[in-house]
Amino acid sequence: MSENTVTISCDVAVAGLGASGLMAAYGAAKAGARVVAIDAAPSMAGTTNMRTSAAFAVGSSLQQASSEPLGIEEYMAWINKGTNYQSNQKAMRAIIEASGRAIDAFVEAGMPFDVDFEHTDSSTPMMVRGGHLYGLNGPDRAEVFSRLVESVGVQCVFNTALTGLIYDENGIMAGIMCAGEVARIEARAVIIATGGFLGSPEEVAKRFAGASIVCGGNQLCRGAGINAAIEAGAQIGKCFSISMNEYGGANPKASPSYSYRPGYNTNEALRLPIFGGLLVDAQGERFVDEGVMCERTMFCCEPMLRSSCSYAICDEAFMRRWESEPIARFMGDARMQGMFAEFFAPDMRVQFAKAIEEGWAFSAGSIEEIAERFELPSLSQTVAEYNECCAVGCDTLFFKDAKYLAAVSEPPFYCVQSSPCGWLSLGGIRCNGSMQALDPSGKPIDALFVAGADADIFTSPYYAPGSANGFAIGSGLIAGETAAKSALG
Image (cartoon, rainbow, N blue to C red; front, side, top):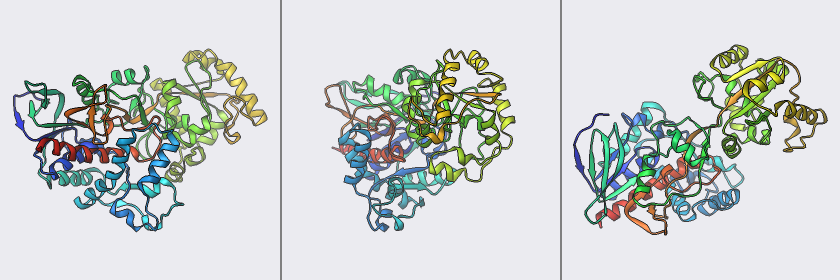
C-alpha cells in the first residue's frame, strides 16, 4: 500500500467490505447517507464474502415459497436451546429479523441463490429451512456485490486498511485513519467491519489461550477494527470461537496448509483427524470423543482449540482401506458424505510420503517410535488402553460410538500432526441491538458501530450452519441503517 495525505469527507465511513461491511455500506447509503467504504483487498474479488458458501436467513422473500416458512421465534429458540443462551440476545433478535431483508437486497442486485423452499416445512432440517446458498462464485459474485453498493452510491476504496479512529476537539468520533489509497476519512459515524482477527497469530494466541489456528479465511483480517474500538473505549466481549474447517485438519508446514473440497489439491493426509479414529493431545492422551469430531467437525472446535495441536494415528489395516475405499465412508457429516461420494485417494501412500517430507506426518514400525518423534510421553499406554476398548467394543473413556472403534495394532503405524483451522474468528466488541459499540458500563459510544466478526454477536462454540454469514449480513444492514440515522440527525 502506498501512503499519501488524501482526505475524504462523508456521513458514514465503513471499514471493511466483507459480508457485514458490504451490507453496512449499502444500508447506510440507502438510508440517505454519503458513504465511503474501505477494504485492504485490492478489489471486491478479494474481500471476505467471496469465499463463503451460504447465509442463514429468516424472512427472505424466497422463503415464502415454503408451506411453513421459518420464523424468528423458532430460529431463536433453536439457537438458544443448543447454546444455553450464550448469544447476545438483543443483537440476535434484531439481526435475525434483518437477515431476510439483506438476502432480498442481494436478490434485487442480481444474486441467484440455490434454494428449494417449495419443499420445506417444519419437519425439514434447520439448515435447509433457512440456508441461502450463493449461486455465483468468483468474478460473477464480485460483480453482484459491486453492483449492490454502486446502486446506492457508495464510494469504495480498496488497497486501504484501517489504522485508527479520529476524534474532534470534544472527543467525539470524527472518522477513521487509513493506510493506503486514502489517509483519512472524515465522517459523522463509523462502522467497524474488518472481519475479526484470524489472520493474526498474535491476536489468536491472545484470545484463544495461546492456541495456534491455521487461517483458512482472509489473511487480511488481523484485528485492526476490534483494537481500534477498544482504544476508543469499547468493551471486548466474552464469547470467542471459530467457524472450524469442516473438511479436515491443517498444519502450517503442509502445502496447502489446510484441507478443502475435492479437487483443490488438498493432501488427503490432512483429513485423518476427522475420520473418527484415535486422536491424542501433546501428551499422547485422548481428549475428545472422536466420533463426535467426525460427525460434527465444524462445531466441535472447543476441544481442538484447547488441545491446539493434536495427533491422529492409524495402522496399516486402516491405510489399506484409506487408499481403496471412497473417502465418504470415513466421514460422518451427511453434507461431506455427499460431496465426497465419488472421491477416492488411490495414491494415499504417495501423499502421506509428501506429508512426511514436509515434516507434519510420520510412519514407523512401532508406536514407541512415533511417540519419540513427536514427544508424546503417554502414547504407548494410550494406544494399549484404546486397543483394549476396541477388543471389547466399548469405549470406557469418552464413550465413543463403537462403530468408530478400530484397533491401532498392525504395523507400520501412521501419525498426522494437526492444528485447528478456522474460516473466521467469532467474537468481538460488545454491542446493543442497534449494533452500537458499548463501553464497559454498557453505554453506547456515540457514532461508533460494529458488525460481523468484529461484534460480540456469536455463540461459543459455533452452533448454527450458515449463521456466521447470516449474522454478518444482518448485523451489517442494521449497523448501516442506524449509523445513517446517527449521522443525519
